[in-house]
Image (cartoon, rainbow, N blue to C red; front, side):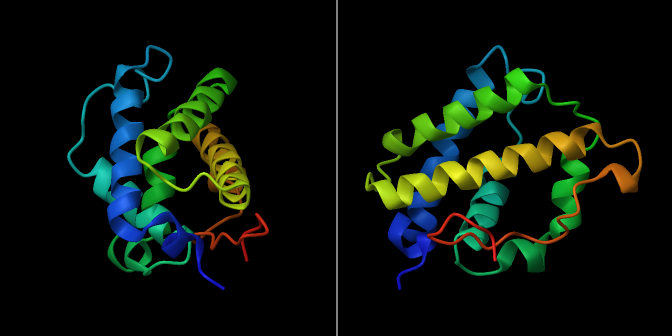
Length: 148
């Protein structure tokens, strides 16, 4: 079966998605505290993460490691409103980036974003390592909507 990564269109399509999302996040007043300025590595790093999550190359793990993802979220104190806005803007960016519109892909993508934003939100409030979400590696998302 084709991976979500291949179905999405690989690195090029995912880079378009991350750029469309990041542009929206930078302009959004609810997300501005989380994205106060453009960081040159944000889109490339998020592209690597999404690619690996969707069954593409494991470059995020090899080049950055999951601890990087934990570090960038710690202390952000993401609110419920910010978590939801992040997810909403991400889903809007799918169409802008020209990603597939079929329901199985969109469902898996929505579930991936919902899961990821909940992990990031929990980690953003963690006072100690024990408060962190137990996830310690890039989740490999499947068509069934569950990380394996």
